[in-house]
Length: 285
Image 1 (tube, one colour):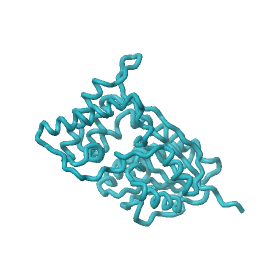
Image 2 (image 1 turned 90 degrees about the horizontal axis):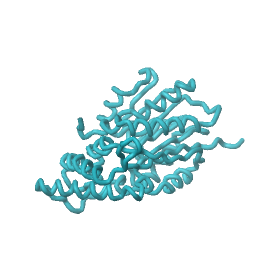
Image 3 (image 1 turned 45 degrees about the horizontal axis):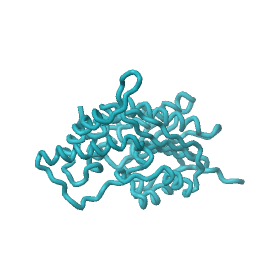
């Protein structure tokens, strides 16, 4: 069920629901009359957000070309299998948003669930590059569940227990943490205001900012714990596959201890998703 990839998490109902809400809000916020002919999807991964965004556009009569960009060739192969866009309207590029040449003249740039992977210095490089890829009046859309406000105060015990129990499991298997391993940017979250300021400093005008509350089930938390990139950030210095296995087991322990219960008996741990769309203002004549 869990293979270390992002795919199991991307298939959880909570992930699908919150990204559907984001993509609908983005399309709703695109100014009327905006030309939508070319879309650039950054860090495409398995293609979930790209598919949803294109579907929302199609419902409104737009059928643009799509360029999928990811620095991982393996991720792009997954995207090739998953993207539901006519082959003549989609292309795939293996490139890093920080370093490589980006296609220009895009009407919309989408960055779903990936902006938190970069350090602040890289953000200051990448965001202006994305803005440069936009034509005048183009829009930049992104979302993330890895920002300071994503963790609600009454859920902190859940996260603390999860990490503590995962470390205990690893130690019980004779695995010790290697000291001095650098933490991933996603494990050092920035506040929402940081992302908004970053966007505005790049000359974009905010059109819509939302925070969506997600009620994560046990499977939701197990799935993200199984993702190797997440495990590497949550438990730096441990062997990554073993850390992921420990996080799946520890999620169960922490969930059983700290999950909230709804009126129907469903149990969950809440987390907030930040969703933003901004516009590159047209030049005044």
